[in-house]
Amino acid sequence: MRNNLPAVVSALATFVLLGIIGFLMLVAQIITLNGVIDQSKASTSIGIGFLCQGLSILLASVFAGWFANTLIMRFDWSRTTAVIASVIIGTLLGAAISLISVVLSIPIAGIR
Image 1: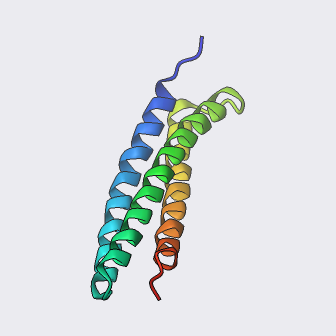
Image 2 (image 1 turned 120 degrees about the horizontal axis):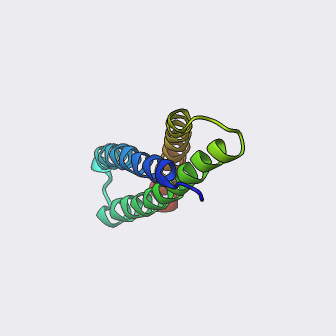
Image 3 (image 1 turned 120 degrees about the vertical axis):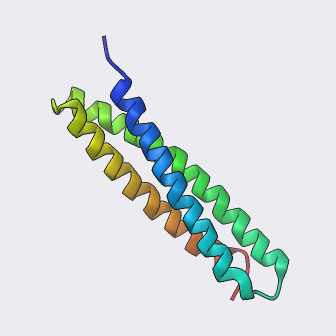
């Protein structure tokens, strides 16, 4: 029988870390868009960025859980090492996707 505790721990840790990173990116985006004249375009950009960050957090958390199980079952890693590696990889992947979504949300909203 498979033990899902490492997958749950890595998914939860990735979710929390990406939540903190996502909040900081959202604050940075609000500060960046402070000088935009059109309030509706700025709000649209923030909304698109928030939605994409939420999706990237969920996807990266699921990936971290799956990756931890894969490292343990297929490659015979220890639980601790697999959880640490999957949290690091999942957090880096989620942060990269979040950064791309924030950068792309500005031109999608029509801000030049």
